[in-house]
Image (cartoon, rainbow, N blue to C red; front, top):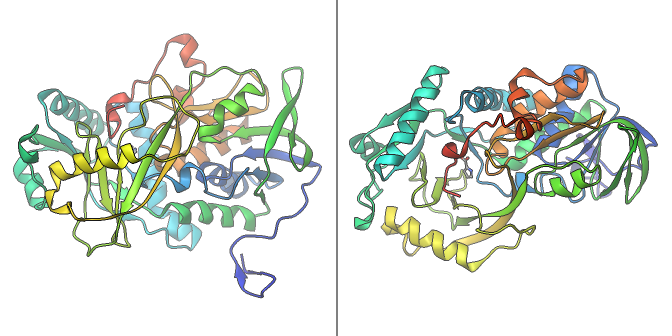
Length: 406
Ligand code: PYC
């Protein structure tokens, strides 16, 4: 930001200011989605009287707790188009921000260990190709060539039969994405208020008129909820019902080792995904925890189970140490697609239900939600993800595109 701290060092984040009494738009949630929405509201729609309210710190929720995979090899045409727009936005973000987001295109293998998994990979490959996305089913020889250190026989359990290969699959540095959007929004006049918890949303009739926070009241015309694992807490304030359930999603990193893994490897059957970060750490995760829980506690069960499955594929890792472990909170919908756009309350917009794929949607959700709020009309890319689809039974079944079983 070109600002100085009290010790005269350059600051990336602004000093916090008192809240104003009125904003045109309040965004609840200062993660990647909230920051991206603020950025596009200011940059593309000239809406700058905006406050982003974050109960913790910027990017400290799911944005800082995921495994940073970016891809568009989804199962439904709606999902593929949406995530492909995100991949294209990600590719230009570093230039847009003038900040290195460590975007690294690696290629993404989703392994199939059974006939039925292979059939789903073929299905996804065909839907992807139809939408112009670079995905194909590959056999064992091609996998062995690209990932020579992997045991394709899985130590005798469920050998790999083939994989869905998605060349654009990438990783990026998650905090750079959130901070890049935050800086871009701030430089255009948006206010970012960390440690500011929303306690109520005020309405008159069916229209939003303001929010209460633990730092005072604000009047506003529009409120956007972009809070992932806190979605039910916010929607309950307005009596809006969603079918979202919150499950913890855990992940961990190994100690740093020499670069050897330049692809992303996912096995839905073994419930693991892994890539190597620019620091040399293996970034690993598994499926969501088995029960509904609003908590970011991590467990020994998770690392024990993950290590067991990882060693089937990579036996040489048996002496590698786990360095850090954490959990995020996934807001999961019955069809595994997000909930985006307008709601029955005038001036209240929802961006939720990201389940296990919120990070990769950061740019496209920010852009399409900003458009929706600026025009008070749902953007065509997110129309299929409207809240009313559950009442209309017009679901967007994306479960087959999950990296791991749930
Ligand atoms: O959708 O690629 C993904 C993913 C990886 C980990 C969790 N979700």
